[in-house]
Length: 234
Image (cartoon, rainbow, N blue to C red; front, side):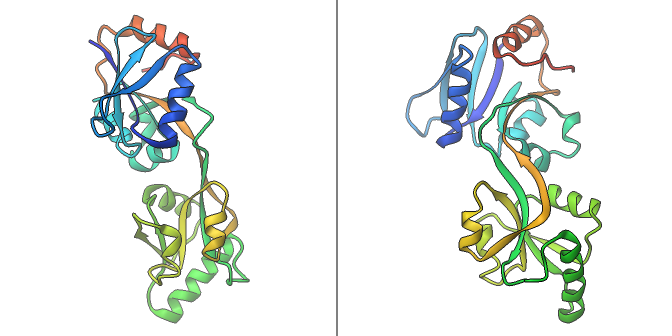
């Protein structure tokens, strides 16, 4: 048996992930071509590297096909219902920071808070006969947040492309998306609501509850000690 570790397969997130493990004595590297998604691990026995897209890792963790995985905390919370029953959060890793926020057109001078948005949504439905549209990729997180905050009279519309452009393209009136600096929002004449921070995300190491850990107790304990993370309580 081996412990399968899933990490992002490309880009800055993969590089930062490799750096994080290297600082703890584990060398992760790609093998083969850029398209092979194959990798190798040095510095720990019985650990297999699996390269996946960040969006695939929550699903693979939930299914137990990988034992450990690195992905954004926002993706785990959005893609997995009752996420803490499916995975254990072992360690925030200190990179990949982004805030999931709600933004509206900058010209909406009277809309600065969630309470303002709720009032605007009610007025919008009365004026147009349909609910105010909020474009997002994060349906579960946004819906749960707005329900908790008592915002009604809206509908979520799916956006898998450039969410910031949906307002300009008239396919939504507001957006809920991740942002690091806010520059893209400002370039698209959008402003963040002052009290609508849904989730502060970062790259996080997770363990899968559904994975087969049979015979891996000692190896997992040694790995957790090497990485400086708490042993998961399955």
